[in-house]
Image 1 (spheres, rainbow, N blue to C red):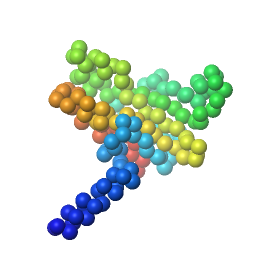
Image 2 (cartoon, rainbow, N blue to C red):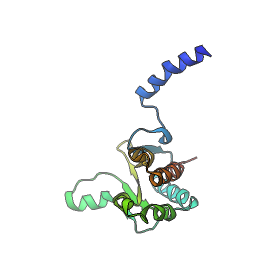
Image 3 (cartoon, helix red, strand yellow):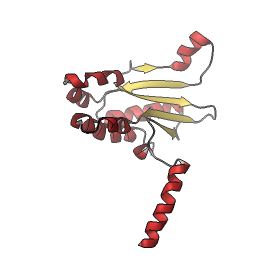
Length: 159
């Protein structure tokens, strides 16, 4: 047992330093995950996973920064789309209280799908569980992030 504990104490810092983490344990505010799928397939899978979890994914809630920035700057930032979605029942539970209306500026939840210069497709989204740690003791916030955080991670499950 002592040998296993020593090994754990030695290996854990190495893993932390090397940046090994998953979306579930990320300590970064923005989680990025490589997708094994193509661009359109990645977008479709995330939306499908979200709908299966009861989230609403309005077609109008999307932005193409490649197209929009090209119009203004003539610079091509690469293929991307940012789309937003909402779990309406969780949102209502929180937003019916005046003290939580300030969180409207962070809603709805957004996911970005983009190609990097290596040609691979990536997804990024906010780590709401980490954000929720800033509001320890706020039961409504803790409940929301503990419910929705794992769902957001499931949305980017490409298996």
